Image (cartoon, rainbow, N blue to C red; front, side, top):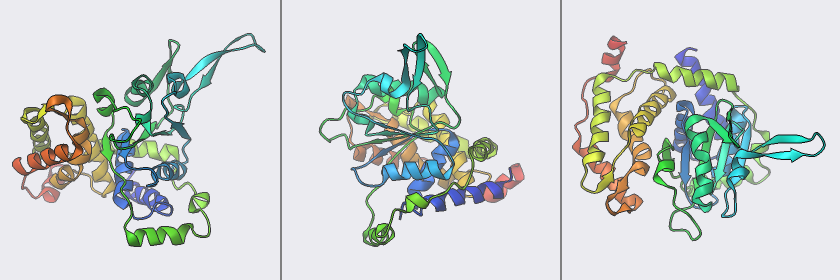
Length: 323
């Protein structure tokens, strides 16, 4: 699949989603980045900012099967993965598949469930498979989790454990629209719901081919060294108890390749690294004393980005020569 074709298809998906989600072009780009990179994404924001509609619009745009789990305190792991039940008519146990057997899974308000139920997604997110009563089943490709959570200060929430946070490639905030965006939203939804008229613009097979294409995106040695210096700086910072893990390093590399592809390039530039670093790295940090606000983590990543020298070569020209 040619780069120009992939870029055109990605643009078509983004424009399709923007028929429903207004003024969130960067958020949509980041969601598509994680989807192409084969990761999972965590959206943290107050209710009503369009997180669910974004997930449903994405699933419809790629002709994918959509699954949704509304996480609550009494939700059980079997409600997520599925279970075997005894069918009296046929006299044997039958598998009833859970919502994880889908392409786009919305894990809504994931931090309202207990840690035991939250952990039922660990195997799904990392290994794209699920084990039910000792039987391991592969999930369909692609499998993409969009989890939403209320801010941690909200009553009735259980903070996600570090092992689960590390399995999210990115954590971002959708944010509220500004005045002009909300005016456009009102006008668009005044006479109907544009989601109902949304159509698929690419197929699942085309998406899988695009996911393979990102592996061809070039990351120069200078940029790789720059990324590693940022990673190691998080492990040595006095305010951080545990920095970014090797899993986080690999997730960062894959996210950069996907983002470069979305921008229509076949190589990664330092600006990509600086742009994605907060979304990919901040939620992986464990602060001294086990606590630390989002503001603290954002400040530390900004500090590290300022301290680490940025490669200064003319990357467009150099990367073309290296390719």
